[in-house]
Length: 301
Picture 1 (cartoon, rainbow, N blue to C red):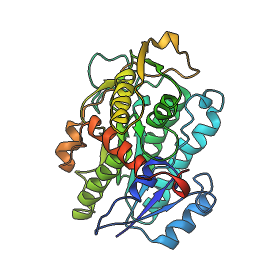
Picture 2: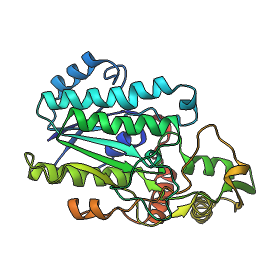
Picture 3: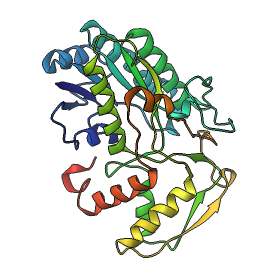
Picture 4: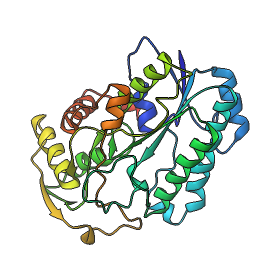
């Protein structure tokens, strides 16, 4: 079964391309062939690929830049996402849409559940929440997956930044008062496959429709995430690097980050029978993949 995946050069789309599954043929398409802001290109891509489902992994992800480019963020994350959902509905196709922890304010004491009221504190978060709403309004056959702290061998992300900094630094300063769950993009791809299997079993059903939280198991601060990255890298021969824990106030950014990005995954596990592995296992697998050449040479963005 063919699955159209938008956002060809992104971490999740590229990770889906690494999956070995006999059930699905993932066809990733990106600009200029498929542009979320160009309805004609969407129609053409759907007609050419004839998928049984679409995964919208394309997004404007420049969190800080979005503070001064909010219209550009909304064009992709809201209007574009809604357009993908609408084209899919016109062809009788369900959509899986990727969203983010940034839809929440981050001031809750415990993990967020799906019933918690969103309250984004940044332009990026507002654009992603609006995208969720646009997708749900345009296509009843939708699954919205909120994930967080995504990393992979591909493109730019926190793990790869830490590895680069460790090459010439003995100490790296990292924020220690923001909590969340580092989530390996290849584990996200496996989770998406579990959703697709559920849809394939009951394409006309309604029980699987809705919004779910899908992150790795466990939680960490950015500093703890960095410490684990450095510990795993040291096992492969990289020189030891120490983390100096700092506060959010000591590392100001244009966009406000949620202090608490933890999200409960009970609903996802119950509905789709799948739980992403512990985040620490993902770090180990990602560093192994990078050292084996994945994400290197022509395979990087």
